[in-house]
Image (cartoon, rainbow over all chains, first blue to last red; front, side, top):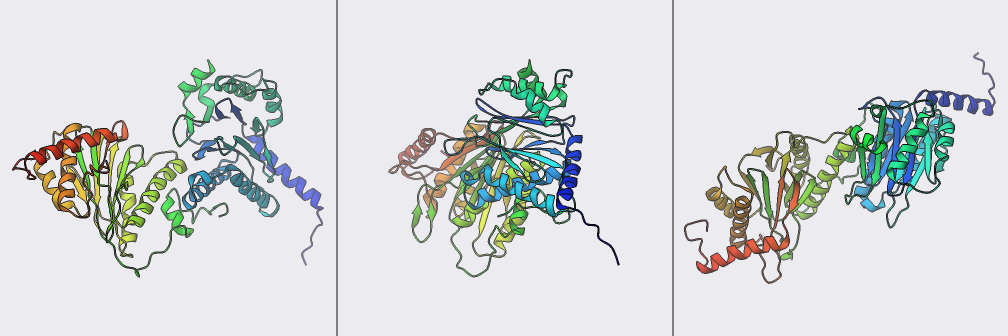
Length: 225
Length: 264
């Protein structure tokens, strides 16, 4: 007869949370912030091809920290969900809140029922227009979804970075200032992040249907100068 | 629909069409309903800096259903897709192509090559045409950003894809447009000459084919003309198009309705 050890649910949840947090803390952080004309997502990422930030839809972007294979699968599911929703209804019907909720449900399910919780934290951002607001939703490994009013920080050192970023101005600033603050917050006082180790994506209206774009090293250097 | 997650073994990859099929997003086709006319003329002409495409605007059933249909659309910045055949299937086809190219780009962070786009459409056409009487035949033209040339791809009814290095035409007005193109085409056409040849070819098709709409001076509606070049997909301004057809029409009026043995 095999014997079962009783584990209190509180303990089980604590163990799983600790496991997920450890995995996430190994990776580097991401800052997402709203600026006066759009949304900017900044990641510390030494790889120039394994992206943490990407386009989901015309006005929606995605950022993930933690295990790459896990958040990349979530990114792909998000693109599929958005493209098929837009194909079935109309492009204007694709809304970030519905997507954030699906992510939250899936992460929540995996946390309680999966073999192991996903070691990821994700951010989905929407650039507003006349019918929808600009939004940042952060979804944590256990499915907690939070509506971040101005900026969000994901990853291991989130609290420290958040405190550093929050110390900057309280109103919406230009892209240049917001990016400088975000990079400063990611780096901290004793460190400088090389431009080549930064991955920057923005959502901004420039007259095109698709508003997402990646900034290359030259563009980032120009903005940080 | 919920969050579409797949295990690594049955993941449909970056193809939106295969994903849509696997989830039942595209309706199953059956062989049950009546066939419809193949009424249209679309022309693509290669010139030294890209491709000119000209398309008529008329939707024809048993009578004229619409006079201002757009049969040429940008599939992405450097690619144009035109359709002939059943309108409903054609529109779905264009939407599927547009979304598939964008979907691939977002999923993999690289754009499909022009040849990749052309081949991708083959099985979609095959699946439609071999299982349904609601035929659709597209024409794909684009600017190849790698080779820096304009390229034209035409298809047969079973989805076979063929590259054309001169010009191509699809739809019911083909015989009349093709005759004009064969006489007027040469390998050194510039943009303006290619536009003029394309406009003349569709004028001939509209003149002789009841299912192709020529220039409509009464309603001020004209065939649409686009160029796909280094600058991407560009549609000619209405007034520019109108002026070109006024010139052709004036010449034809002067000659009493005959081409007069020359292309002019």
